[in-house]
Length: 216
Image 1: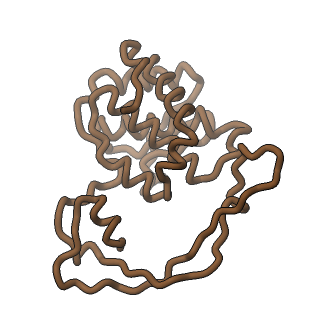
Image 2: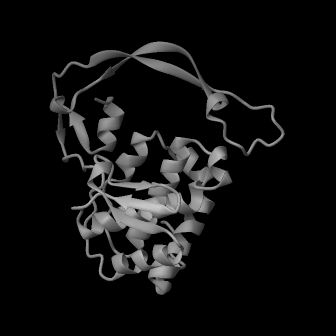
């Protein structure tokens, strides 16, 4: 379920005459930390629920328009890039395995080891592998303690989007994935530099001619 604005952003609109479903939504305010190092992110003090208000949402059956992309949906020709990123992570000392038990997750980063769900298309596997590789580089160190789950997922999926687009793929689900973890433009801007740096590191290894790619 979602509100009218959210459905419009997904290229769908509420059908004429459909009545919204009333729910209580949390009212959240941001807290300002007094700590000296304000660059650190602390999920427990970054925001707070101060109450609830009534809002209206509509089920997908009450809307019409473009079909919703599924998480992990990536199309295009991956070429040699899939083999190249496998070689890249192997050279970085990261083990790769295929494991059905991680379902419904498509990939999991364990720190020195990545597990992928078997049966994905080559473009989907590539994007998933880039996502988990970004986690390995960015979130399996001391920096993890200074990030939230929202930030970690936004960074990893944004890296996967940039790299996938750079090699000519069409990662149609990235926006939905980021929204699922409540990522937004403001948060994206906060970590844009590290996203571009990580994407460039991966691209320089799998396609050197694309290493200077910048997100549009």
